[in-house]
Length: 494
Image (tube, rainbow, N blue to C red; front, side):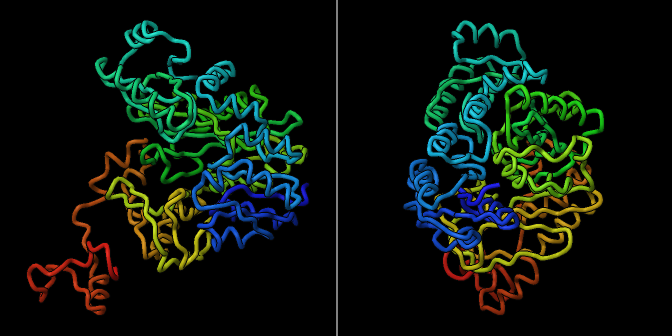
């Protein structure tokens, strides 16, 4: 094992990695920008190094500054967390050239899996079903026209590099195709410096499933079961759970065996996630979507149902140790649900929010794990992702986990900025969620129930406002035309 590991990230994932390093007796080094001088991840580590100004390009995305910091403090290895540089082959290569161990897959495997066209070909070679599609790397306009003619609409145009929904367009008519291709190319090039595209059959209401795999350098490749990740907004996950409520033993075996085959065929090492999609009406018919060559945001739910510390496994693999388990020893027990608590306004297209957390109190109760990167009084900056915390609820059954998650959310007060907590609470109570009737368009389809227009303040909130002298407009005794403090963006807010 290593003596010193630098964590090239921020927020809750940096805190989470530091926690495992402390348990292992390994010195941890945090990095921070000027916007994060006093954030929890800085204090969670044994040491901390300033990278630079707040913009990510001058701090967390600067390969040169991170490698220099690791070299200066005498680190043996760098853990990239997720996001930022975690899937950049050039970062992994720079670490190796500096004599540092990169806690993740090889640059070659990362480059292969980061290219959607190459990854799709690798998945097909490994026997994974792939959505019928056409890579536009070498295809002519005539090739595209023939392919579209031979396949049913709608189609999905997406960037061959990167992710997060960038460079992605749905085409429902032939007339839309030219503009969709042009717009997707522009967005893909702006986001990833790569304008190559992939056209695939579009599944209208798919489920999003994924399989966690781990592989060492001794030829051992194992899986830790699947996760259900269908609840999304703008291609970003909102609630995840393990195991999936619709996956039976036969489907689990098929998906997980295929995922292991892909990782083995790519020469993969470390923790990775094979993402799949399945038709909502035919969940047994699944297709390869992509493979993420890093730790996932939702990894805690897999840890909750398997008892495996995935960061510990990553570090051991990077240090050259063999996996200590057989596949038969890795089983899922119980159920876990993760909700992502974000600084965003769901009523206004999930607009990210910034400001001071005037009140922030995490619940502490049995069966609940909180991974967070903020504290009360901290300022949520505008420069980074909106994720504040992840609340993970574990139970003997799915219903027990759901009830625990709802109970914990009701005891998680956050004031000062808008968050998605009310939305998460309604999601967990929705009859379709309770039934496990999920797909990636759930939030859009159920918007009226999840974000009701008549979401008026409760009687308790009105009493508090009255005590503060800020009674809502329209309440008894309030003069007509008085300003409404509930919609005000300035001054005190309840």
